[in-house]
View 1: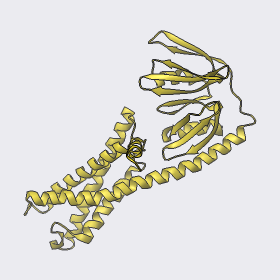
View 2 (view 1 turned 120 degrees about the vertical axis):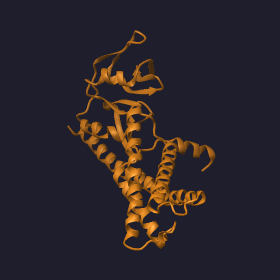
View 3 (view 1 turned 60 degrees about the vertical axis):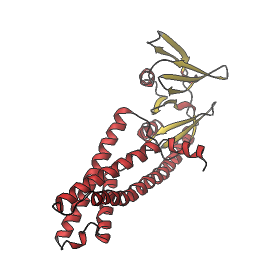
Length: 288
């Protein structure tokens, strides 16, 4: 992998943690087991059963801090709608591990009554916790990525089967649609059957359509949400991603990836992304 491929990989879209409770649970169990085996920071001098109480405190605190980070992070992603990339995920993981490490420092100071806790010892706790917590968190990230990939590949196969089943009866709906751009006092009238997909590009929206066999693009200065509201009552148009609205009448096939689906349309080569959030809504059209 060269530098360009690495940069592309780090900028690629990545799902936020799939299972919040599972992630927090694995992190806490890992912390407990590692501390039980290696017993750093003088834990080997603590007598049973108080030792297990102290270790359980490390595990519970790590679980709580991990859970808090995941819940707050998930809320931020949902509310802001930012593109969650692998780079952002790595930075988030580093922050989460650091917060677990510092919380363990405070817990160590409290549980051991502050005995012998100089700056070097505190830094060793942070470093040790980072090493312990980072492994399960990173492994779980890639595990969730692989689980999502297999799940979406399987769902894409069912989606293609539904497409094949409906093919004889599925037809392109032809009716005139008027899309209004209120900010520019502009509008676009098109045959619904000629619209392939709508794509968000920055603060603009590109409407990709065909006319006389040619693929054209009309740019409008409005939000994708505004276009979605105008097209929502037309059953063939469905929001499938934060960046896309697709005309389901033109879908030829689908393939699964770690984020959801990739749709392939007739008359164009663009791959339309379907995020996990919109999969059920898209599937509903072909199941009913």
